[in-house]
Image 1 (tube, rainbow, N blue to C red):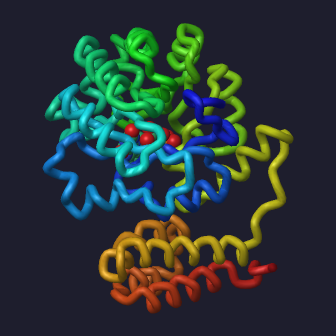
Image 2 (cartoon, rainbow, N blue to C red):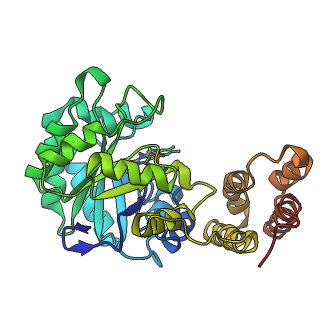
Length: 327
Ligand SMILES: Cc1cc2nc3c(=O)[nH]c(=O)nc-3n(C[C@H](O)[C@H](O)[C@H](O)COP(=O)(O)O)c2cc1C
């Protein structure tokens, strides 16, 4: 799949997820075969760009190419400025968020709220495309409400504005994360535009990936929540789509190696104080809910020091998988 002049290694993309897809997690998913991984959304508010949180989100040093920054906002000029700023910092692709239902974003009619204002959406897309020389992509939902899906019209506007690829999360804004994502709308969009279309929503296994590709004819697949605690899903899906079978599974020892590497990367990226806190949610996903070891899990979550957190995590992982740690 190509995004403008940039050619991707495969069809699999990591979905941007605020609070999750920071640089350490993006790097891990890229190692396992995600060909593109956008930053968490950055609001197009210049006053925020100097804040520690936004600066960290836009930290692209050491990021694997192609580097994609996602921006969100409702003002065409500010969006164009944000895109230029991101390119100055090293972005090679700009992704525009018209999918986020969060109130903080929609209050200013940004994110998925823009699907209800096609003219404004078009102006934003045009201004951002004109502002930068790198490819610009769009991520959106199927519409505001199930009765009035307009993804196909927005896709047409986007293509005319010069957008180079469109990702569709198969739910409306009103749906939030309820129910199952549907991909018929994505199929309709795929049939109506000639730029690449990427399907997104509830892809959580090699089988669902293959089914969504077959149903939509999409050029790519974007995976979010299912990769949390299971970043090797990209490797499984890539292998399945190529060979129709699962790859040799990673051993628990190999998984532990990657998990510890990830946690160390988090500690280094955020520093010890924030790092142990950010790491907790990933530890929770890696371990699942080990009821029998609830006390140990609580001790991990109380740890304030990186070395203690890593040791406790290793002990608990090994005790859960004891006897199954073959090399
Ligand atoms: C915690 C969380 C944060 C998210 N943040 C963003 C975001 O910053 N930008 C965006 O475009 N989508 C965001 N999304 C939506 C995802 O990118 C994706 O479209 C959605 O989760 C459906 O894909 P999935 O079923 O594979 O998770 C977020 C989703 C979750 C669960």
